[in-house]
Every structure is written in structure tokens, then in C-alpha cells.
Length: 87
Length: 273
View 1 (cartoon, rainbow over the protein chains, first blue to last red):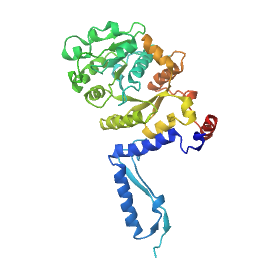
View 2 (view 1 turned 120 degrees about the vertical axis):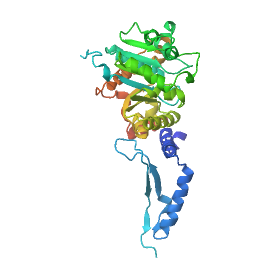
View 3 (view 1 turned 120 degrees about the horizontal axis):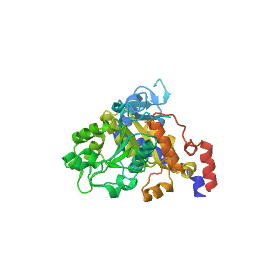
View 4 (view 1 turned 30 degrees about the horizontal axis):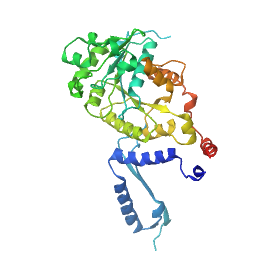
């Protein structure tokens, strides 16, 4: 019965772990640094607008070029805005 | 039928079979791919580049026929031809064994390139079985190759190493790299307990050349020293498809490797409860 309540399959866990692991492997940038970048971006953007820091997502995508494995990593930041005019 | 053997000698392909991690099936893949190509009438030379830990000879069942080896060739103790073992079961198939009593530093990348340049004159395909790791053995193995087959299993550790290897191959100017996913267990994929082929391809982002199911016949074939490519076994068929794809033929992937839908995953979990 335990399996029934399990949230993720072990396959999904493996995929999620690998995705994070390979980002830092490929760009030589640790998850800790990603967290620091995220915190700093939040701080800067928050000066100008109200954002949903809980649901923001930043990642380094190393597969930018067409045909697969690009050599130029790109930093993506997906930041939901709660209120665009900060009052 | 294509029996236009070795007329265009300059187009010979030099393929390195590599993985980073040990024990994922590089040697088995090399043996089956080489044997499969020879079965189709190609002239094939298999080279074991794992100096100190040679294995391709036993997997091929040719261990009793070794006189000279790769290090002897490089050091000038014999001519290239003397070190080549002809596989009597398949015309056109030769093995250059590695040395068992030496270490990786006995050969340099430059020397490998020279040996391969000589072999290119007589062979359509030169398959290099790469040692595990990313040190000198790896550098030797990739030095003369123009194409790579990256072998991995659907496990986190093997995939991570494969990703590293792909990065290193890219840095060394490799343009053609293809992926073989070895030891896939469909029952586990269905249950959601193993990454599917699509998952692995999605992560590694290089073209897929084959999916080899986890098949006990591989062990049996290795016991007997006879590669199972082309046999009526799941792995034998999968390897036969790989051999066709290497030559640029389009072959549909076997049924066991089709993507698993979300619903199958869900029902898989329910069945287990």
C-alpha cells in the first residue's frame, strides 16, 4: 500500500536528480551558486515590482543550439509577477 | 544486396566505443558490432585499447590465439599483420588484442593514430574498444577515431559519466556521436522504476543508435565466446539493428523500446499495490 501514496516514481526521481546534476557538471556551476543567483535576482527585481519568489524558476540550459548539445549555456529565469506596479 | 567490399578504402570508418563508466557493455558492444559488420561482408578490425585489462579477446573467443599485441606493434616487435588475429568464423573479421602485462602509458595517442592509418588501407571499419575512465587510455582510444558510439545503461551513474564523455568528445572535435542504451528492462520501465530510452535520449541529447534489452543470452554468449548479434534473441536482434544503423540504414526501433504512456505508468503502479 505504501507504493500507492508514493509521490514520484524512482524513474522520475532519477531524472530530476540527473537534470540538476548535469547542469552543474556541464557548466561547472554548483546548485548552491544557482540558489545564490536566484536570491540576488529576486532582490533586484523586487525593487521594481512585486514578484512571486516562491514560484520563480531559474536554470542554466546547456542545450541551446539546434541539433542538441550546444556549447553556449543560457541562463533562463522565469519569474511570475504578482503586481507590475509596485506601490 | 551490397557486396561492394573495400573498393573505396579511403572511406573507412574508425569508430570508438566508449562510456566513461566501467561495466556498462563497451566490450560486448564492440564485439557484436564488429561481428555484425563482418557478417554483412565488411572488412572489420577490432582493436582492444584497454592495455593491462584486455577483455575483447575473451568475449570474441579468440584468447588462445594471441601471439603479438598492440604494444608489440607500437614498439616495433612485430609487423601490424602479425598482431592481427583472424576470426575463422567470419571472413573479414580481425582482432588486434591489447597487452595484458603493461599499462596505459605503453602507447601514446600519436602512435595509435599511426597504427590506425595503416589499418585504414585494408579495412572498412575499425572499431576501438575504449577502456573505462577519461585518462590516457581514453585519449589513446579516441585519437584516431572519427566517430563515436557512447554506451550507457539507464542508471544515474552511467548517464552522468556518459554526459561527461560526450562533452570530452565534443571538445576533441567529434562530430558524429551516437548513443546505445544497454540493459534496458522494459518491466521496470513500465513500473516507473527505470528511465526509458526516451528519458535517456532527452538527457544526453545525442542521436540514438540502439537500445539493447537486458538479456541473459548476452551472458551465455560471452560464456561461449561467440557474439550473439543477429541471433534469434532480443539482444541479438537489437545488435543487428545497430549494425544496420551504423551503415546509415533506417531501421525502426524494436517494440520493447517504445515510449511508455503516462497511463501505463499509472496502471503499473496500481498493479503493484
